[in-house]
Image (cartoon, rainbow, N blue to C red; front, side):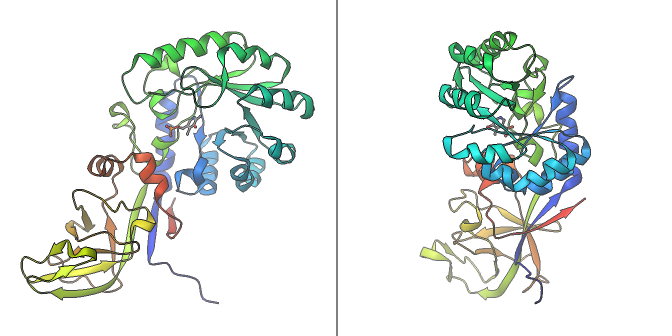
Length: 349
Ligand SMILES: *Cc1c(COP(=O)(O)O)cnc(C)c1O
């Protein structure tokens, strides 16, 4: 059988990924720097991310669920890595938790009790909720952890990418609890939390978005490079006459004779349908406007400025995350993880 060739692809820069991790590790000071690879490595590919960062020296990884842990278990074993499952261990997870090389991050009193009774002394992590009210034991419940073998104690910041008094409030609340568990590692900062300074790093940081080229706060912009490029093939090129419309609901009409090309990308691939400033495609240096409505699987661009571009040629979508987030009103997290599974993934390095 011949190999499947996909008409859209992500070009992934493995060297930039590693440089972003090294930059975040540097900014983490004396703390170890881990990596959040949940949601299939934020849509980029958890296995490819994990093996590259492991070779660069990263030892601590975080996924959301046991299904995600299972996907990378062989890499954990091969490199002798630490893997934490952020959503803890439900009753239904206990068997998987016994067989996989990963620790649950216990979040509730019931999870702690179950782990103490059923896990046979295996190590675990725990999440302390210091004010986000999302997932984790309350600070008053931390004493429940006295009888489990605690590896990493963590908390999570609600407003790390903002200037907010809640950051320091959460840091102090976490430091208070952490002082009662001197033998465990302590971890508070996500990507933006690393930028809040050394007081937030504790013993281990947990960046996610910034590894993949997201810039959650201005302080990181000088340190982070893009990792993901989105490219698609032209399926058809045509000429439309003045007054002709393009796409659903005919929201674009040609002000003059225009050359257009239809490319293999759409909102089912995670491209926002309601992108406000119709952005541009980059081909070499040319920026080609998107025209009409983004369809489920197709986008039309104005290629009048690119006479040589035709069927089968590749174009690149302007997918600089901070800029696209600004012009679409979406978060960089949503844009990155929303990129669907229909792309080929081509890693350099
Ligand atoms: C997703 C997640 C992270 C990584 O956060 P970023 O903002 O992507 O750096 C860290 N810790 C926890 C608990 C998370 O859920």
